[in-house]
Structure formats: C-alpha cells, structure tokens
Length: 305
Ligand code: 6CS
Ligand code: FE
Image 1: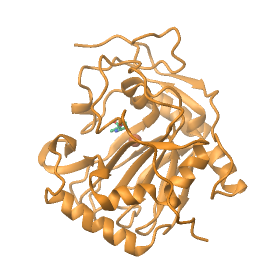
Image 2: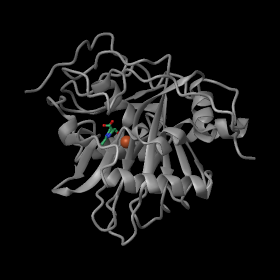
Image 3: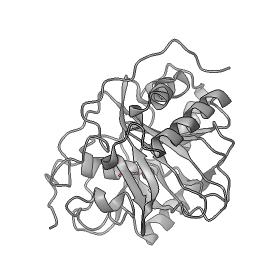
Image 4: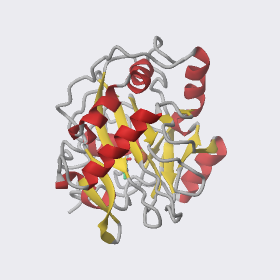
C-alpha cells in the first residue's frame, strides 16, 4: 500500500509526492556555526563543496580497536539482529549493521573531538547521533549504493525538518579507487532534489538493501553533475570524510579482493529534532532514526595539530 504525504502545503522539501523529479535552490544555511577546530578556509571549502576529507585523521590504535569491535559485532557480540542488513540477493552476506553505540569502541569513537567538535562547529549547536552504521563492503561481494541525498530520506521517512545534519564516514580499511569508494557531487548540497514516486509501506526493509525511492533520475543527476563536479573519498585507514546531509552521493560494487569497511555516523543538531515523517505513514525504527538520543558528550581531548 502506498502512503500519501502528511502535508505538502507547508513542507519546504516535498519529495515522493507522486510528481516528477525537480531541482530547487536551497535556502537553508550551509554552515550553521563558527567556533571549532575547522579553519575559515576549511569552512569555506565545506560551504562550496559540501564535504571535507581528512587523510589519516584518526590514530592507528583507534582504527585497530574499531576493527576488533567489527569482528566482535560480526561474531554476534552485542547482537541486535533487527539492526543488521544483508546484501541484495544474498541473505548470508552482511551489508550493514546499525546502532554502533552498542559497542563501547564505537560509542567512544563518535564522541571523539576530531569528529564531534567538527560536527558541533558545522551545525552550530550540540549534536545527537541520528544514525550510526557499519558499511562492510566485503571483498568481491560488497554491493554499491545508487546516487541519493541522505537528507531526502531523513526528511521524508524520519521527519528531519531541515538539512542541519552532517554525515561522517570513517575508513577502517584503506579506501581505494578499486574497492567501491564513496563518490560525491561537489556543490550538490545547494540544491534539493524532489524525487518521483511515493514511499511504500515499510520501505526501509527494502531500501537498505537496494534503494529505489529517493533516487533521482539520470537527467537530474546529469544536471547536478554539470552544475558541480565529481569527487571520490580515498585514503588510508583512519581517513575521514564529513559530508553535508544533502550532498548527492553513491558508490559502486566492491569487486576487488580487498574489503572496504567504513563506520558511518550522522550528527544532527539538537535544534533539528525529528518530527512526524513528511512522506511515510509511520516513523522508522530507533536504530535507523534515533528519536531518544542524548546529546553527544564533550570529551577533554583536542583536535590533532
Ligand atoms: O536509509 C538511510 O537512512 C540511508 N540509507 C540509504 C540506503 N539511503 C538513504 C540513507 O543514506
Ligand atoms: Fe547515503
């Protein structure tokens, strides 16, 4: 059964309302705060491109602890089977695993100043974790993600009112050109793309394996590519990309013999609390869209110089 949007008239980001794809100019700020570890130059780059990449930002010891945590989670420690998603067409291959704060190593990682202070600066407020996940992209069998804006899904399905969130992908293995790295369209965060179709019931059961709704058509993507430019996140383990929640991004399959294991955290402003979904009949579960998250604590550490 398809659902109708809750209220199109006062929705600033209508999408999946049964029309065709449409590009509209963003009016919301791109950077919401000023004080923090990022320099003025970095803030201007984030405003221009919608993302910032840092090669080898996190220490090797942190990466090692997190990889150990990945093995523990894969072995079923801290198990939460409803927060695990298999690859399309292969129920036995783990694609994603959500709610990483169930493991202490990841709970500590999300609160590290190298990540959380940047999020607080970009969003101009305290932050909560909207969603956290591992994307495993195993050697040979890891499948890609089609082009999409995360904010489009979080607005339509989770009731996120404004694009005032930042995603952070942490490379736990090297991310190379050949193991299914993240591609981003620089500048695409300046446009909101309204997507065709309507959200089916319980869309997340399908979309996390293979997303079909909330995916722009090729004509729209071609236009965004013309207005901006394509870039790819690569770097050694410990590298980090921060990307604005409305950046158009996607990735290809990993057909290489090397895994691409990334942890992914979404920081949302405490001033952007989730409402009822704008285009789905009921909210998604807590492990996909945290409604009861506490603000991320401030730790004593500092941004590495
Ligand atoms: O559903 C989510 O929250 C995220 N996952 C997918 C596959 N698409 C939208 C968003 O990035
Ligand atoms: Fe995404």
